Image 1: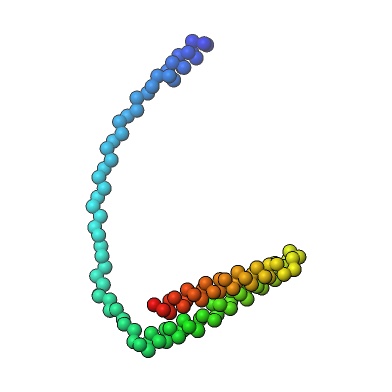
Image 2: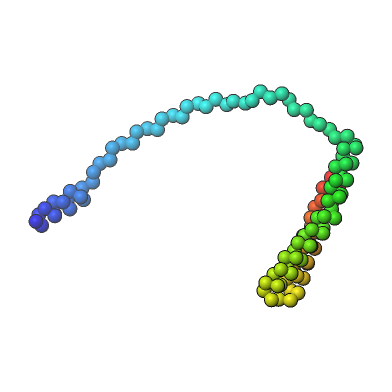
Length: 114
């Protein structure tokens, strides 16, 4: 029985040669298709359209300042009632909301200046 084990161990130790790997085939050439579209016409805005566009952005400025303040203050008040802290989260929400509102307002004003 030990002779059988030894012969099995010897056969397991012998390396079995692996077959050679075949070469990889070349990839076929893929055609490049581009759509035949008509040339696009670049629209230029009239002065009146540019004015209306700027007025629309100007009407957004108060909302971008007020909405974050209101939302984050209400969120802070809700957290205060849930966690039992009196004005801590309300004040933090108001301050962070004011900062976010001012940053949004400055971003929109910079867009108007372009």
